[in-house]
Length: 82
Image 1 (cartoon, rainbow, N blue to C red):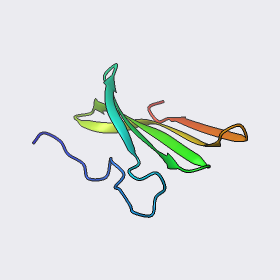
Image 2 (cartoon, helix red, strand yellow; image 1 turned 90 degrees about the vertical axis):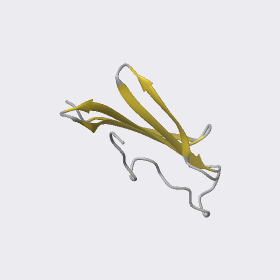
Image 3 (cartoon, rainbow, N blue to C red; image 1 turned 135 degrees about the horizontal axis):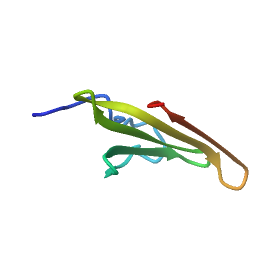
Image 4 (cartoon, rainbow, N blue to C red; image 1 turned 45 degrees about the vertical axis):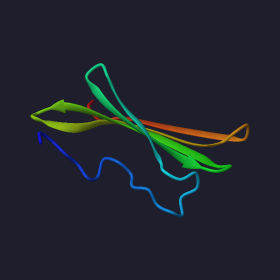
């Protein structure tokens, strides 16, 4: 095994609406993206961005959305590499 983490993926919890929060994983432009979402009428989603640098995967960005369709939307985006 080259690298592993038991904290990068949110774990399924029975009391979370809409079941498993893990939405997927993708590599885009040398960046590892991990997607999560959940909720019912009020929804949330976020994306973690990792890059392999300094001989390890480092969190370089985070985007969070919290919303209720047609009523409220909050987006927070952090660039941790600059």
